[in-house]
Length: 445
Image (tube, rainbow, N blue to C red; front, side, top):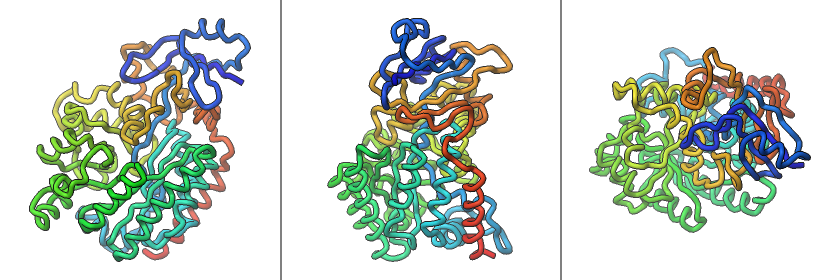
């Protein structure tokens, strides 16, 4: 049955001003029509009507970079001195790799995936890209994850962060995990909202031959190739020491830069590296909260946007309430640039929706317009001060959080109603995460 959703404000795209008393018509998994609420009611009198007075109807958020398994490390006990200190290599080699990623198994991965999917959709996230690194949980880890994501009904891209840090053989298993998963999802494309891509870690855990092999697979399968890039000073320093040039200069020399490249983080960039990103059409994802948490720095996002770089926002699996992610993106660059005009609220909202979709290579997600996927959210619009088209983006970015999301629809299916995640026993899901966190933490204890 076609559905009319009639809010007080409609955001079609953050590139335009919000439309007061406009709504949408949804048929199956698509937006069929948009227009003034009165016109839609008159035009489609037999449609199911959703009264969303005092709410904003907006595109669902696109979390363009998340590590779903990361929730298991929240609050992890550390023996003796804090092993996360020092950043760079110490963070990875002493803490994250041995105590988190190397400890993961399928049950841990699925428990974390289930919880974070519910957490994300509750905060208005309808689409995401996840990066899994669990070298002792392959093969089969992505298929196990996919079953969970399919049950929750989110739109997602799943990948395994293949790396040679364990062994060259393990790296090859990781690449095969990705390639097989891409083909599996394509075979089921009419039954799933999940897809895959090719992913590897970094220049300091992967050889030149391995990196070129990953991009050759991306070319063969016609899909994106993702990597972490310059999250802190460590990687560009490593590249200068061992390759005689910075990270993106090295990738450029290998001949792999281009629109197929999806680079996350991109915090510590030289002017030349920004030029390469812009000139080659590399897509970038920005994680402002986690960049602060690991002491990586402030990414030159305003500079990249000024060059026309395609850019989205991600939670990195740290804090998955996307309002908090947007708020940090809104604030941190003002402090970094010492300017109140940098990163206005409408730009941030765009990065959280359509910008993220473009960064992930989706051209029919992130906007509420005829023909686009019906991925949407209803957000409480009763603010302490009056809302208006000229201030609505600021009101949403600065004074909303996940508790203000009333309903969420993905591909035409309601997944959250009145703040409740449908079909989710959050108590049982939390208990499962606790049990698996304790199993993982046992190695630390």
